[in-house]
Structure formats: C-alpha cells, structure tokens
Image (cartoon, rainbow, N blue to C red; front, side, top):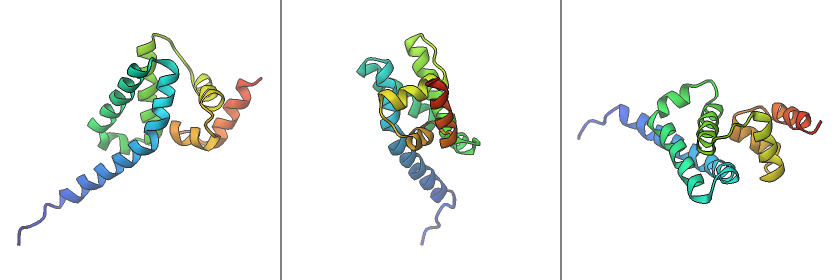
Length: 126
C-alpha cells in the first residue's frame, strides 16, 4: 500500500478553508466593489483580491485577524482602481446604509468587532 504524504491533509484543509472564506466573503466584497466601480471592474477587483489572498494563504491565516487583513487588501485595491480614498467610517456607512448589511455581517466582512461597527455608525451619524 502506498504511503500517504503527511502534508497532503494540511494542503487539503487550507484549500477547504480558503474556499469557505471565499464563499463567505465574496458576495460582500463584490457588493462593495460594485458600489465604487463599473460591474466589470468590480469583478476584476474581487478576483484580484482573492488571487492575492490565495497566493499567500498560509500568511493570511497566520495574521492576527485574517478577515481584516483580506478586507484591507480589498479596500486598498478598490481605492487604487478608483483613484479616490476612503476610510473605515465611510466604508462602514456604505456597507450599512447603501448595501443594507447588518452590523454582524459588516463585522464579519471587515474583521471588526460588532461594537466597533456600531460605534463607527454612531459617529458617522453625528
């Protein structure tokens, strides 16, 4: 019987973890990009973001907050494509008011704590 490579399960787990991350985050990333870019460019921005994450997945999962790390990559790429800048308060307001995401979903998407999202929204409304 052939010996199994002990590294193979780890690679499989990383693939499954990446696919789960992609399936969870891709719709929100696309909605955010589409709010800033034409549809074709939004899809390119999302594809680029996930290609960067996949290429360095082992690093991404060792970041203190992988979701925040990925979100920062994505928002940076979108701002480069638009030639404009944004900040977490503007992004949070866009996600909540325009894209109708819940506080919990915004927290998951951006890698923030729900309390931080709530405080950010409150500050934006002042």
